[in-house]
Each structure stands twice: as C-alpha cells, then as structure tokens.
Length: 270
Ligand SMILES: O=C(O)C(=O)C[C@]1(C(=O)O)C=C[C@@H](O)C=C1
Image 1 (tube, rainbow, N blue to C red):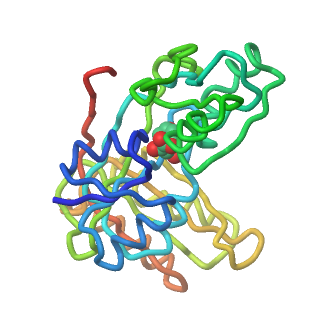
Image 2: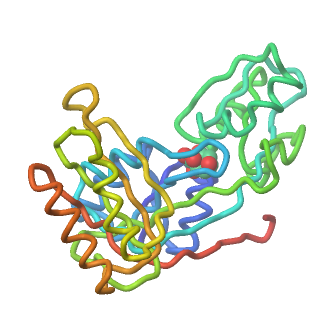
C-alpha cells in the first residue's frame, strides 16, 4: 500500500507512515495530504493531530472538517528532538513550529539570542542546516548524516509524544474500534449548547478523550467542535448518543470520521 505524508524524508510523520506503508510519498502540507486522499489520489495519508506538550495541530483539525475522509487508525509515537547543525556557531534555529514550541525552554536557556525560523517540517529544517552553516535544525537525530548532533532530547519532557491519524477515503470508514472521532458544526449559538452536545455521551457512560473548538471561519464566535470518545460507532449507546447530537446540529452537520484502535509505534532508536 502507498501512503502520503509530510515531507521531505525524515519527518516524524514519515517515521509514523512507515508503520502504515512501505511506499511513502511526500507533500509539503497537511492540508494537501488530506485533500489528496479525499480526491482518491492516495489510499492512505498520515497526519499529526495532537502533541502532548504543544496540543492540537490546528491545520489537521481544519483539514478534517473541510474534507470528506475517514480516520482508520491512530498511531502514537515518541518525539525526541535533537539540535543538528554544521558547527556549534549558528544564528538561526529552523524547524516545524510544533518542534520549536516543544523545545522552547531549552532554546530560551541555551540559545536565547538565536532567531527561530518556522519551516514546513523538521526535515525541511535539516535541509536548511545542510545548505547554510549559520542555521541549526531541530529534528530526529537520525537525520544528522554528515552534520553534528549538538544536543539530544531537548524537548520539554522525555514523555513527549504525538498522535497521528491515518486517513482513508470516506467509504472505508469503520464502525469497529474502541475510539471514535467526530466533527460537529451545530451552526447555532445559545447558552448550554456545548453542554447539550456532550450530555448524550455522559448519560451513556461514554468517556470523552478530547473536545476542541475551532473557529468555523463564518463569523466570530461560531465554532466547529472536534470530539473524540472511547466507544465504537458499532455500539448501540454510540448510535443513541449520535442521534441526539445530530438532532441538536440539524442546522449544521456532523461528520463521523470513524472508529479505530490506538497503536503505539516505536522505532529502533526511540
Ligand atoms: O515536521 C515534522 O517532522 C512532522 O512530522 C510534523 C510534526 C507536527 O506537526 O507536530 C510531527 C510531530 C512532531 O510533533 C513535530 C512536528
């Protein structure tokens, strides 16, 4: 099977994608990965959804709200960052914005005067460091070929981990699995709306694992809600809860991304 993920080769997304497919292709943005699966160009896409330190990857949330795709697997993988450069003498640190944020304390204490440059991915940061000796990158240490690893494990916590979703064409959505993800756009705003959307789950003893609001883009104060919970779409209690949520969102829409199980993925050097 072929999968598409964030490139170039060597990103954390690439590491996660190797657990899904032998043949991995690359795109420059999460949005184009999700779109290329929705268009049928690829069968699987691997996208970061949430990090234990820095929280949601908002471009992924928005792409899942805007494209009709299914989530078929969830992969959790440790994220251990290294500082990589040609020499110890650099002016700029280049990496993905998530990685720069996950190493904020280290950078502030060790390199308070260095410029931070957000690039499309951690591996793109390594390319910058390879081209320019005044640039250091934050990335997985396996990317350091011919460069120097100045420091390892510079993320805020050793427990740093990122969740990835494996997206598939919408017709491959599964009802089986211990977790489910939904996107709900109620297109309404009144006191207690969010409470009413969540009560159907509490009443059926369904544990929510994440609720995130994102602006709908329509107007200020209008939100899309991303909800993950510990039950499968095949369960009667889920069907009942969803019927109530769909009734509450009758002016908007509910996207069932699908049910899946969580897998923890490790690589040799993790
Ligand atoms: O830049 C990469 O290496 C990515 O795969 C992206 C990404 C992210 O968007 O969160 C993935 C995992 C880490 O949290 C840091 C960056």
